[in-house]
Image 1 (tube, rainbow, N blue to C red):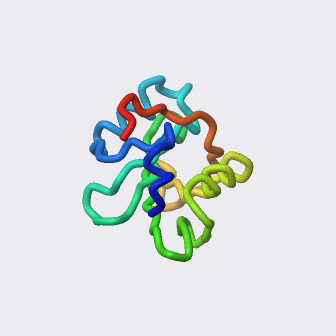
Image 2: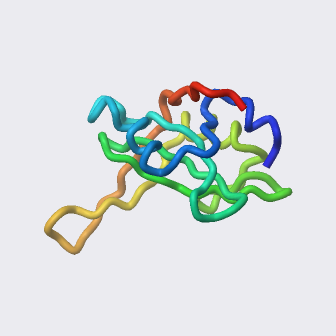
Length: 120
């Protein structure tokens, strides 16, 4: 992970998953596409993109390697490039349909980031 990631306003470092959920969903259904980046609670060295999808929080792990940032089988040079990509291209999510055994494809564009109040 590059040090430049630590200085970005969307990077929240060590906040918990629960706090990240509260941050991206605090506006309810109006929070669609709001996001932040945080360190994984469970996997050392990995980052998580937490974002809102129709008022519910979703979490996608990112693998950070020497080659760059990998998320959803896509490889980017860095986290900032990944964010820029998903602001113009939708994240493809497989969403279950309640009370059925089927699912539908949901698309989310990253819109506004949740700014971190503490800079590291």
